[in-house]
Image (cartoon, rainbow, N blue to C red):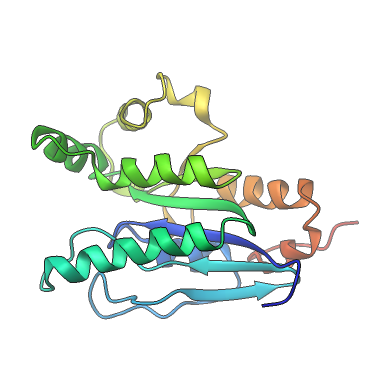
Length: 205
């Protein structure tokens, strides 16, 4: 890799629409398997000095062994740790329609939900975390974002955390606020060449 290269990583549980969001934001399409959890290595897209990386989906994947699931999660963590010196931002993607239910299921078993664990990890080792609450088009509960914020240790209402939590629907293309803020963050970090990576981006005048 070239010296001075910076990186934005996309992380999330399998089947949350991470790769779909990656493609909705950026001028590229990534490899996707025929079933959840089959993206087994990072997909990368470089523009200027910035590398955008879609990491493998972690968590439980039906039809594969527990050891394989753990191997993928360990790979994601190690990748982020090994490249933390160049990572300037992380986008964690969650499924807003099932996040709270899954989190509470794990909590009842006495475990920290893997999405919450990942959020805390990213918040600790990367300069900025954008939490993309995806599949909002499937959400009927008007208070779901407040519940998500609370699970992540943020005092509701979620609007107090609009710089962290971004409701999106990657499948329907409703990603504009996240795209705008991610672009602005990169510009403010001096990475103006990366703006050309985004769909619908215009040259700055």
